[in-house]
Image (cartoon, rainbow, N blue to C red; front, side):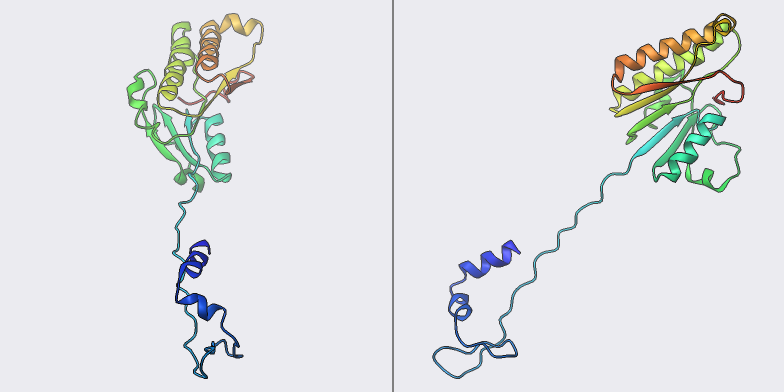
Length: 212
């Protein structure tokens, strides 16, 4: 509209006709010095500007094929997000239709270079990674693997990282020492690299363990 008005105001030939009188009922202008009917006034159409759609939110779920992770994937899809999963086993065995909308990546967080390409264009990460076994193994998966993921996400410019941790259960802290120490190490790293993100502590349970 602004471009049209600019053309009207700066056009020497248009000004006399714009203020000429009278105007007929069918929209044609009569010249002020004759009874000749001028051609209808033509206005060029404004140029159409194509505005690109806003970027979609892309979520990466680490351990997305476990119990917690798969439910997060399903919920995120229902909210209109683009969803991908990263785990050592790759595609989930779930046969529900929603699983076909998830991009399933196979890789190992203990080799963080395998995560870099997967993090491209990701706006948020949720990690459900954790495992049980010997203390050294539990620390490696619950701690080292998550710390690697947090650092890689920060380096790639991911906006937000959410970590699913575990609540303290007294004696369980001793029985699963490596598990809890790994979780706490991951929480500390998260607060360093993503001070405005956070973690969620859940009650320890085999059913809630991420199938990483």
